[in-house]
Image (tube, rainbow, N blue to C red; front, top):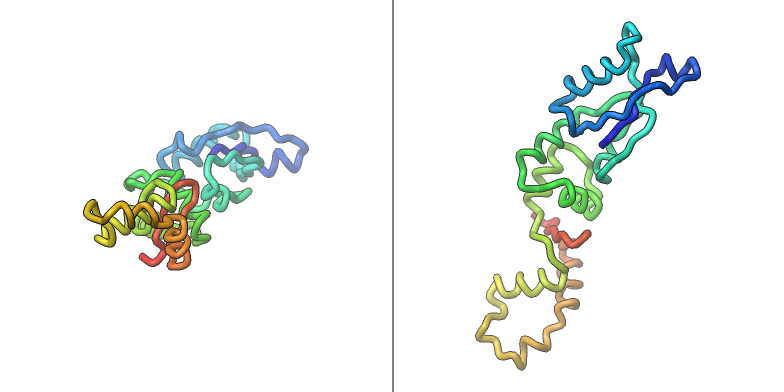
Length: 171
């Protein structure tokens, strides 16, 4: 996420003087705040104002605030850095589940993530993994399975797909 960092004092005096800063360039909230204060070193105690945003991911959009960066942003960023889940997977999970964006969300996403594929592909893989069909299943039967229909049924049972990512919300 990139933020345009100004101050309330400048804004109230008719100025939007500030600078775009990319949060990915900073290890934590303290380092980011130090950079913001450096931008506005002409003020004794600048009251920071995030006047504009450029969010790379929807989950970041949910955490935007004009006057502060919530600690959850930094917690989520750190959790994602330690996880096999990347921003795109997390974004898809947030959009698919409508769960709150908080620290626990990363762990829930990890637990519920099933892979990147179509719903039909996942339905077939799940049936194969569970032994419902195998290489011994006659093609007379296997070629007539409606994988889209199986996926629809799985969707009713709590499986969701978003942007090609599959999640099992029952986990």
